[in-house]
Image 1: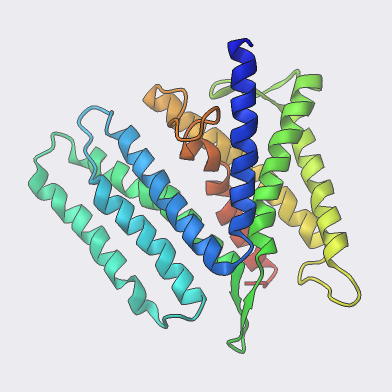
Image 2 (image 1 turned 90 degrees about the horizontal axis):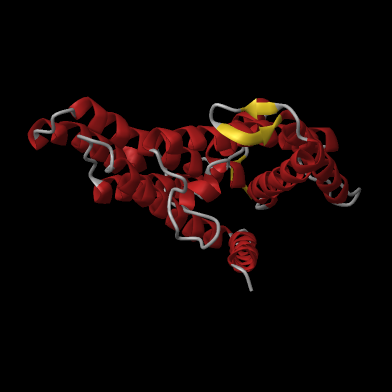
Length: 287
C-alpha cells in the first residue's frame, strides 16, 4: 500500500468519525454545549500556539482559552434561561481588561502585536462559536424558549456540502482561479458549483421539514437563503484562514485530526458562516 493510499484511508476514517461526533453533538442541547465548549477551547489553544511563533508576540494561552470557553458557556446559559441578565458576562469582561492591563508589565518589545493577536482569538474564534447558541436556543417575544437543533446542524451540513460540491465541480470544470494569491486551488466554477449544490440541499431540507402537520419556522425559500448565505461566507471563512496560515508561513494549523490538519482547518469556514447565519436569521426575525 502506497503512502498516498494510506493517507486517503486515514483521511476517510477521520472524516467519518468527525462527522459522526458532530452529528451526535446536535442530538441534545447539553451535548452541543459540551462539544462546542471543547471545540472553542481546543481551537483557541491551537491558535495561541501558532501565533506564539511570530517574533515578539506573546499571548497568555491559558487565560485566553479560559476566557473564550467562558464566553461560550455564558452565552449558552443565558439563552437556555439558566442565568438571567448581563451580569453573567462580567467575569469575561474583567478577563479581557486583565489581558489588556497585563501587557503593561510583560515588557514585550511589541505590545501592540501581543494585544492584537490576543484579542483576535476572542473576536475570530470565541465570539463566532458562541453565536451558535443564539441560533440553537431562541427566545420568543413572550419569553418562551424554543430549541431547534436542526438550524445549527444545517450550517455544518451546508458547509460539508459546499466543500464536496466545490471540490467535485472544481476538479471537473475549474478553469478560472477564485483567489490565486491566497488559495491557488480554488476556482470560480468550484465555488459556484458548491453553492448550487448547497441551495439544492437546503431546498430539500425545507421540503422535508415543512409538512402540513408540523411546518418548520423556515420556509423553503428561507432555507435556500440560509444555505446560500452559509456557502458564500463559508468560502470567505476558508480564505481568511488560508491568509492567516500564509501570513504565518504554515501549511496546516495543527495535526490533531489525522489527514485533516488542526482545529482551525476544520472550523475555518464555520467561523464566518455562523455569524453570517445569525445575522441572516435575525434579519428574518427568527431570533
